[in-house]
Each structure stands twice: as structure tokens, then as C-alpha cells.
Image 1 (cartoon, helix red, strand yellow):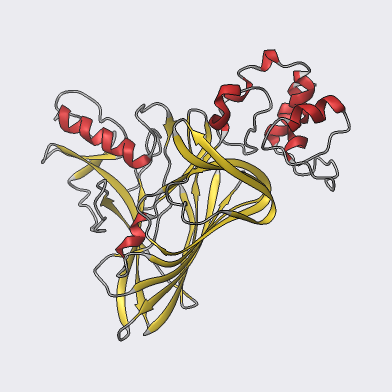
Image 2 (cartoon, one colour; image 1 turned 180 degrees about the horizontal axis):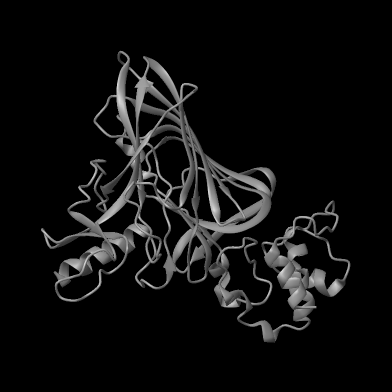
Length: 385
């Protein structure tokens, strides 16, 4: 039993993208693709995926699909799989409603669809079959006593005493979709909580591979948009999926460059009230993605002034690791919120200091204001008067 538990722990960590150390972060939930629960000849003709990075610790998702039904009108059950939290003490919800997903809506051909929830098995590398688990047999973390006196490893697993085995589980959302002949549109929205890890203010995992479950095994026309509306965000994406075409900033203020996260090639972005976009045809997503805050990209010179996230969620203390080595640190800390908004400093020392950081994007039109300062930014200012 102990060997099977260790294998399951490794699978969960891989699935959640948290790395090898179980205490390095908290995984809340993944974004995901809508998929057909049964085999179908319907193809995915177009998808526009917009992920907005918010300051409240959540990401907002808006997905517009165009699906083509080559045959007569038919009914298809569609589903959405959301992995259970890991390293988090939120209570298990037997109703199948994920604790960190909200505002979940699906509109098809202009009409809102009702959906149901269930708890399902979520085995790494295997397509979810969306069959509800028998919760009289499978019990959640904290509800059972192991025969050897040990606790269950974590709350992302269910245990069956009858089978003496553990399984990872997910919260499922599923609904009946009535497809007309030809083109059909689906508009899907939800919000989900950002995860975090050591050296990461936020991590936003999003599963793209399930798109391969549609009949054409690809997205004929795919657009990814990442937005930072009324905020500034500094983040990166591993670029293995995105080498076929360039990213471009389509709105607001932003820039990008090639970088490395340890030895992994990635694209680094800084956005202020802006949007970055990537587009491809005949896109076959062979991997999933994680949008990650970029504190660790420049870890070798982790000095005061490295970008920190504005949100009120978890913030690692690492950006202040070398605070004592920086002259005028109190002034610099007080002025960080203005630097994030692009203020062009009149003070030569401040201007020179912030200009060394890649994320700093001066805006000659910005008039200094505290109207949109977050509570944490006010705290930063008051603590360093």
C-alpha cells in the first residue's frame, strides 16, 4: 500500500505542476477545455481563449468556441474537469462543486445551458470519463482512519477501505449540448483561483491537451489572449508550444522577450493594462500551459525593486532578499507602486534605479494618483515612511 501511495503522490504532483517538493506551494485548481464525454464526429473549428490576470488572486476565463457538426442535429454530453486542490485544507465537497471556481456559465448558440456537478476519477494521462464516483465507497481526506494508523497523504485523494486503495479525483461540470447541423457557437466563462509556489506569487495552470478529444484532433484556428486590465503583471510561459508563431501586444502597454526559467526556454512578458496575443492554425496542443509570475526569472540578481504582484494574495518575501544592500531602500519601497504604473520619476536617483529593471515601462502621460492603490500597497508605503 505504501508503494502505491508514493506513486499516487508523484502523479498528483506532476498533474498539478507543483514540482517535487510537496511543501513548495499550493495548487487550487486548473483551467480546462470543454470536451465531448462520448465519441463524436464534431470538429473544433475555432477557439478564442482569453485569460485575464486579476488583482484579487483569481484569473478570469472567457472562451469562445466554434464547433462544426457535419451531420444531422444531435445531442452530445460535454464536460469540464477541475482537479481537486492540493496542499490546501478546504473541505471536500461531495456535491461536485469546486471550491475555487465561480461564475461558471455556458451559452450555446445564444442560449444559456444548465449544468450538473459530480465527483469523478481523475487519473493522470487518461481522459476523464465523467462517471460519478460512488461516494458511499470512496471517502475524502480526514473522513477515514487508515488501518496502519497513518493519515491520508493529502486532500487530493479519495480512499476506499473495501479496495484498500487511493485515487485522485476531480470536480466535474457537465451538460447536454444540442448541436444543429453545421456551425455552432459555445461561449464559456468562469473564474478560478491562482495557485502559488516558492518564488511564484501566482501560477495559473491551464489544460490545453483535452482539445484533442474533438474529432479533428486539433483546433483549426486558435487564439490565446492574456490580459492585465487595470493592473500590471510580470509573468512567463514555457515556449515549447508557441514556437510556430510570434506573440504580439495588441492592446495597452507591454513587451516581451526570450528568457529562461532555470534551463527551460520561455517567453517573459510585462503588461500594464494591456493584452498579449498568440495565434495559430491547425494547432495541436501536445502539452498544457502554466502562466507563472516571473520573480524567479532574474533570481541571480534578486534585489529590491524586482517586480512584485499587486494582488492581496500570497506574496513571497524573496523580492526583499537583498534589501539591506540597496541605498535609499525606504524611498524605493514607497515608490514601487508608482513605478508599476509607469511614473516617470523627476528624481534622478529614482529614475536611474527603476530604469535598470526590464519590467519598468515609463509612461509620460501617467499622472501620479493613489486612487487605485491596493491595501497592501498602502501598507508598504506606511511601513517605509
